Image (cartoon, rainbow, N blue to C red):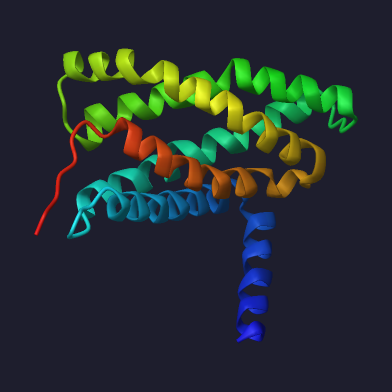
Length: 185
């Protein structure tokens, strides 16, 4: 069994090297799907909502993976690939003041408008009510992850690591963004 896992990991690394954007997008989509399946089960859904799952996977594939890919490329250019503590602190601060608020807001809008199909007025009201606590919680959690990511992860694994942790964060966001709990038989 470990030989199969080792071979799969080797092939994944080859794809990550040969096609980094595509591999990161697919990885983010799959992880987003897993996190949504878990969030659905936690929220009490009896039968997995396939449409919702696919829309969340699409979000990870079309936005999460590519956004992370280009963000980390930009950060490496902006900070000249430095990894000293001062530079890592600057990267984390920049990320937390810019992309963190945007990503949480964008996910809540996407979830309300696209996944739930709610009108803009309801989505805006939900965001007004929940966004401040979501962002404050993010600022308690993500700086540590950002520090670990920029300090210890090789550049090629930063998006993958971030996507993995984001899949856990997405369970929280899914549950927070959800307007109503729909339990299906």
